[in-house]
Length: 405
Image (cartoon, rainbow, N blue to C red; front, side, top):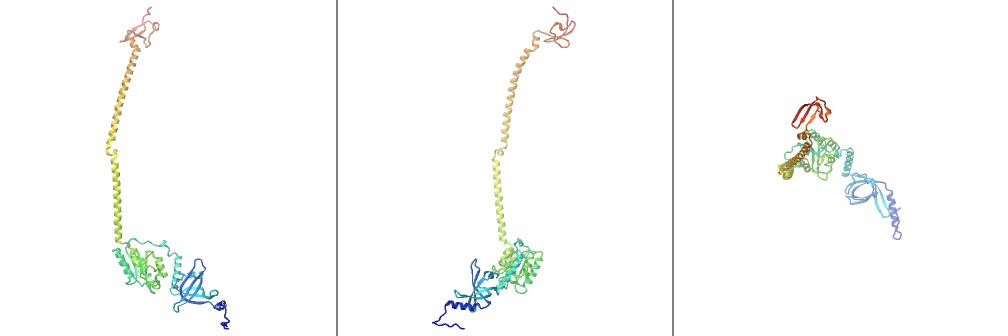
């Protein structure tokens, strides 16, 4: 029955809120599509509050979403994204506010596409295809560069012209393929395999200009990503502009923000290299000059030392010292000989004074028997014994006679 009210018989606001709440509580879950115009997330809070709007009718509804329901959506919804919400209509009686309690949240359109790409990205990352340790270094100056790009595309022109401007002698092996649409993945993969097998190709560049997310989908295809991961030749990804980030950027050995940037990354600038050579030559020349100056100063210091400035001076000094010592030795020897000569003369005089010869020279004689024994007493010889009489001037032979008195 309809509620009977009048000016005299009104109902309280709480009663109205209770009746509206009871009626809304009888509603079941409903799927609603709309555009997110506002997201309110407080750190640590268990709820996320959204505003869902119908752009065609300019009608909005508040959505309350549990944090675990919101976090299941990858990538996380952003303002402006279209979503489909499965929720239970609720009415908050104290404030009289209607809202939708979200039980499930799904992106649609681009959001759904990005969610699938994010899932593929997680799966390939779990397999290790994006591991930085697998990245192969690019050669400093490649002999031949493989280029995969669209037919007569601006990306091809950017890569070729900028690379040749930086290094005029650079060579390219170009493979023109479809870069969007159904056949793009197969053609790019085939060109990649062909260039990877080429014995002279040192690096492969996959280039394409900017575009929508749908246009760049081939460069996030799992088949192409695995083909790039299996390449033996380093691969450079130059897809779109700076904000574009297909999965090819993650598996490639080098990611260039644009095709022009790829040209700058794969070949050095000849002018810069010549400048570096000139700078290195100047540094080397200065280093050698400083070394020579330092060694010349050291050599001059050595030459200024007395031992090298006058190398014979030390010999002359030592020769003078030797001569002085020799003269001193001669004088000492002469003095020693003279002193010893005097001592010897004195000793000789004493010896001569004590010598028997001196006694003999005074007229005395020494009588010796035949055996050389000096005869001191007459009874030491017998008559007839041969004797020798030694005089100062010589010796006489004699025969012993009878003792006298």
